[in-house]
Amino acid sequence: IHCQEGPAPKGQLSTTRRRQRLAAAVATTVPFSATMSPVRLHSSNPNLCADIEFQTPPSHVTDPLGCSTEYMKLQEEFCLMAQKVHSLLKSAFNSIAIEKEKLKQIVSEQDLTGHNAQVAHLRQSLSQALNQNAELRSRLNRIHSESVICDQVVSVNIIPSPDETGEQIHVSLPLSQQVSNESRLSMSESVSEFFDAQEVLLSASSSENEASDDESYISDVSDNISEDNTSVADNISRQILNGELTGGAFRNGRRTCLPAPSPDTSNINLWNILRNNIGKDLSKVSMPVELNEPLNTLQHLCEELEYSELLDKAAETDDPYERMVLIAAFAASGYASTYFRAGSKPFNPVLGETYECIREDKGFRFFSEQVSHHPPISACHCESKNFVFWQDIRWKNKFWGKSMEILPVGTLNVTLPKYGDYYVWNKVTTCIHNILSGRRWIEHYGEITIRNTKSSICICKLTFVKVNYWNSNVNEVQGVVIDQEGKVVHRLFGKWHEGLYCGVAPSAKCIWRPGSMPTNYERYYGFTRFAIELNELDPLLKDLLPMTDARFRPDQRLLEEGNIEAAASEKQRIEELQRGRRRYMEENNIEYRPKFFKKVIDANQREAWVTNDTYWELRKDPGFSKVEIPVLW
Image 1 (tube, rainbow, N blue to C red):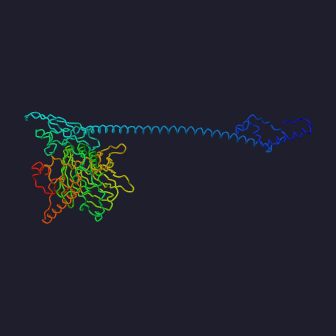
Image 2: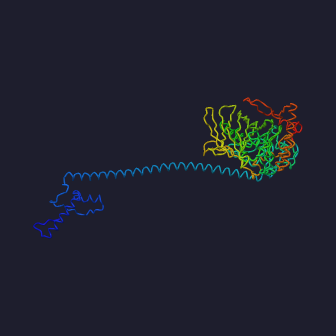
Image 3: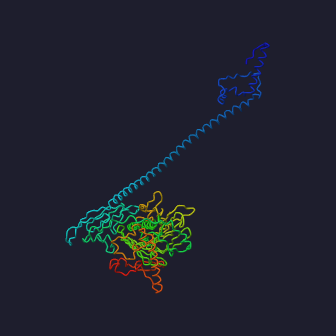
């Protein structure tokens, strides 16, 4: 605003005054310091144009605040301080952003490192699993290929010894019965590292099947088969060597299916049978024959040896802790066959009943006897070149309305002569649920303690976990092998119907796994392949077995063949014969003495039954046909 000298015209004076008043108003609104720094206003407020020119107010215009020097200094200091704070904040934000990026980089590197390690571990585990899968697949293919040709025959030329005269003997042997001392036949046979039940029995050697380090072995027929281990296959081999057996007498292998499926039991009202026996011992209660399976308790004791390969492996293991692991696996394996068997019960043996089983493929011979009727006690003895196994078990059955408990009393015993070991352990409780209605299922629970009575270096505890509200895992088994100081050497876990593992998951090693079930097992009492073979009566055995053998029991045989009506009639007749014998002995004060077992007092001051070492001697000479045997049926 420019003030002109001299008097102004009248109209122009009013305009000049208005301009002066406007300048004064602007000076009042905008601080004086702002008029001195137009660029600062622009920097703090982008909406203001930096090109605006602020003219110096006229000297005669008075600042409303007095335009004091002190006020101007405060304004300038405030602006300088704001600039410094702004710079500091900007620097701090920049530093935080840089540190944030560094932290992100470090975290990502750590995650990448851990991820790489995890991926490497997973790849290693996957590689191991694939290798095991490929190995198992190759073994299954080999077993399948062998099973396809198991009924074929091979020609064998048996060369007589120098002491014998005559021409070479030419015979045809089934592949399942290639037994010869002189021809030294051998074949490769697969052995699973989990000791699976073999589907094809190729070797007839009595005790030569051993697992080697590469988990395969060659089954060679022994040159010095023990005379005590006389079996059908051994007898056949000797007759072949002597030229006494013609080609048609060979067995074609053990049977793979029962003659008839299990009967329909839906029409049986169990409540009418059991309602008056709640809380009582059911061993004294007679059941309909349809509720039985065509095996008895003596044969069940033999069924516990289905995985005897575990004992053979233990007999070749130098580490005492690993031997204990294998013994524990064997103890657990004895329950695997019961998983599909909750729908039926075994026959109760009559007093004096026996059972014999010679397994050339497994290398053991077994016999058992019912040594007491009240209380019912079953005793058995099994031996091979690697181990000796025996037990006597007292069974108590109790019905609780919806379930039935089976309480075994007794000990199981195994000795390994090579190391001088003597292992003992107990059995757990068995319970069958939904007896009256619903789907029946079987459960085992309790604790097994395995001790080596010849060495205190370690013990094993196996817990069969009971299903409850807090634990829904059925059939679970947990265990530990503990040294003398109480330190855990090995941890065991698994399920008694699926397998047992040693170590910590997922790197644990499978010690044992049950074999696959046969076709249509549900229709045939849930029997395993081993159970199907137990009651098979080979024609060549009839003259060698005592008439008290369970395979001659008529009611059991008729049930197996599907003749339910005749089986029920025979069962009633056999039970009445036993009652008559008992009354006769009581009236004449006659004490029953078992034929092949004797009562002893063990180290725990408990009565036990052990073999009297006469069974195999009598079988060989003079033979059971010339021995006085009680008539049981």
